[in-house]
Length: 114
Image (cartoon, rainbow, N blue to C red):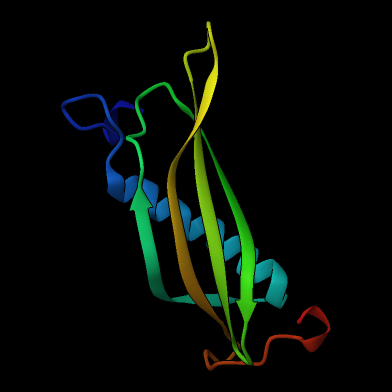
């Protein structure tokens, strides 16, 4: 949307980063079956800008699991030019999340998922 654009018609990188964190957090929450918190952004690469009008998709998968943490990879694709569609990878990132208990402290990731 226009409020997320810079003066060149590209989407702010911070908007993309926030949505990458959301996508990774959903995958970590599903995997750990509960609340999670972001503890690290391990890598973040912008390959191409996201432009106004692009249809953006976020795909997350678990890379590794520790006792209380999970490393999640997120890839971001943009579908462009509806008249002649093309899909390109625009961003990729890896983030680490920690599973949180109801008391706000770390908890173990269920072993049946590991």
